[in-house]
Image (cartoon, rainbow over all chains, first blue to last red; front, side, top):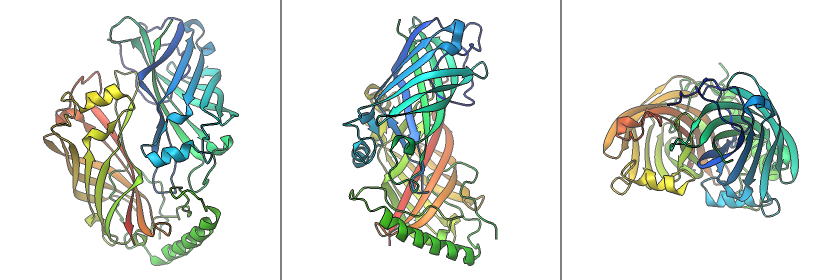
Length: 198
Length: 241
């Protein structure tokens, strides 16, 4: 079976295209989309100094255009259903959907469109792209790690797994309620498996 | 008297704090209390929010943690700000992050001798929440947590060792299904405070540990799906004043 990659810098997904660490693990060029059962976008922040809650978005689509011959030219597009934000606390979810925060009725989608990918090691790199929240677009950079290239359990479809991490300032996107009592910095924890779709 | 760093080492756990410097000089902490009170008053006026559930309480954490601000007694989780999350490696591809949505706890906090504090946690095993319905169902099945037969997961502390001004190691018995095993967690107290809004004493904790699920007989798909499970606890506890 394919060798596992170490998850050292654990950063998150998005762009593909790092020269694979294992000679036998090369993914073919094409479009890869998220495996809905194994894809997570989590985030955490400081709550008044007491704790760091863990929240997630449940519904999102990731599409990667991968070129193994020109890895850093690969692209990543993510579309998140903003209303799928999930804190595990119903009244908090309602508040997050309101105009105090994500105003999801007016801005139903959060999007990320990659603009550049640089490779640092065989399995790590930096993915830069335009993140749009509440109609505001800002460039963000994520540290990405390619965890593994392999196939699905059935063995018939190429598969890739990524980790990505980054920090954004929510105030950059006008989601700044209670800053600084509740932290402005939001740490993204992204773990995504992708399967070749075509 | 050394300044206590808020961000110390380790990982946090189910909320026991250790105050190695339970006898830290009072002067600085008193000053911090005054500063905190002032910040709270100012913050309240700035943070008036109509939504009763808004996170509007002010007061950034003072330098160091003054445990005495949170008086001794029994604390329970602030349901809106208490998370138990776990993560593991899935076939080398990614590290899913799963939470338990419903759990309760009693933290018997001894502000004068934190090492004597105790913690009991009861998790509704059926509240395991992966964000994927099929996976939740599978986790509830006899392949994993067998929640029909074992509806609760529990933790009962047995010892707390102070390792630093805000850190310690919490030991206790973790029971999953019909197996009880001792586990240790690295714990950090993030903040102790009194919140005017709600009129509660409050303690905020972080905890981290790694367990082997096979120790509890939960070994499906090991090693392709990792045996090691990292547990992250971020919990705020409160006690009515």
